Image (cartoon, rainbow, N blue to C red):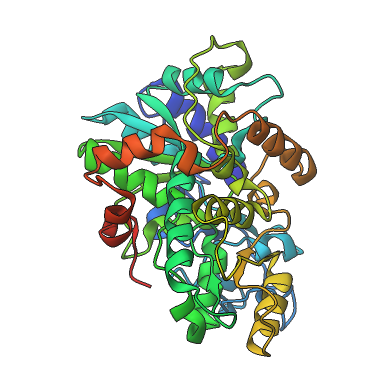
Length: 410
């Protein structure tokens, strides 16, 4: 039985609610363990023998963090302490031996046995991923039919992080030589800065990602809640397990995993009734495509102080090679930009390895959804201020000075 066959069989069993069915004798115990306990494995799994790839396998060559190594048995092995889940090795693998890990089975079990509410935290890149006519309201009801209490758009928390980074830029960037590296979106970008260009970390504000901000906020308001992030990114699986972030998000599912669950359960989101609940601004919604964070922060900084002395000058790079080239230019003295955004995937999150749509279509959908937003920036969005007040922040200044909930140890 192949890994994919095992996954599909166990998924059908999980959504049916049937008692455990004996598995065939040829089940690989390592594959079974990784499906049932993905937290014990790296975000990328080796599911087949790959001894014939030569002494310098392509998967190891493309790994920025050197997590892929040839082992004594001749197979490549992935170090879970180093793997950030970028999935570059999966794309480079010539034998089909590598695949992304799956959290679907333990997530479904958690939904079934939850003692508190279960929330789907949907990434800003979701619009149009499951079908052209799957609106946010229909998708919300599709999740409810699986047992979720509701769906929370992470774009609202992108709004909050946009406000935080805009305020930090306003406070810290005082001369033409100062600069800020955006921190709040891509885990691969942060992993690259922390592990390859660590001397630049003083220029990275200590903000968590919108995913973690959403998870922490829900846990603050509902301590017994189960939080399940849904997006196009495998790297989010690794991010959710990082020691200083662990506990905010209980499981990470990719868009493709959720599509698999819907199909196994016979759920067609496009046929669901509407349940509209629109809380995010354009700024938070466009985080899903390359340049979105820069646009959001630039608009918010300008909204804060239109006549600011040192203007925000943004630059963005998407894809690991372009990110490295941008950083090398910065290290060489290029100060033409003072706010630099990096995204590990070409096209941004819409180009993530587990998106359903191609990145061009995903970008079009993100732009359309951004254009439909009632509010332009988080400063215009009353839901941002309402949520901050629920969390105990009475003023914007109070939020900036005491925002430990949205900070991490960098």
